[in-house]
Amino acid sequence: AGLFSQTTALADGRILFTGGLDLTTGQPTTAAAVYDPATQTTTTLAMAQARAGHGASLMGNGRVLITGGSNAFTLTNPLGLFTGLQVSSEFFDPVTNTFLAGPNMLEARAFHTSTSTTSGQVLIAGGITLIPFINLPTVSATAYRFNPTSNSFGIPATFSGARFLHTAVQQPNNKVLLV
Image (cartoon, rainbow, N blue to C red):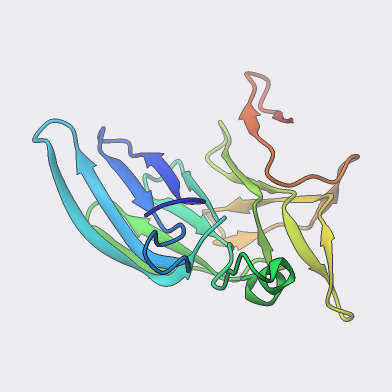
């Protein structure tokens, strides 16, 4: 994994690394790995989809939700990034060290935040996306929650100040601060 990859701490203390740009090819990769600090070993894995600029968050049930990202990237044509935006999601199961297909998001996006909440859900916010039906690139001002109980993404809500490549943090009052 390389640039635009994700790192997620698992409930058992291991660390999951997913996707990013392959440092040799410059393209998004399916590469993933789990590092166990107790044994200082790394297990190499592969996601179902190549992803860079995706989200990854630990859910209350112990699995990791991996969302969106881009499956195509070129530094010589930055607009080409928008042709590779993904709506897909997948789950990492830490018990079996496997990736499983998840539901599609409501819109393709990359460079968004994916934040675990105290309710066990995951807030997906912002990023770059395409305006529905006309497929024009835009910066998103929408957010929605993934509910692991229903295995679905909720109805989008809008926020002021569209953003991408931002950060987000869960606050004690169960609100998420986007910066």
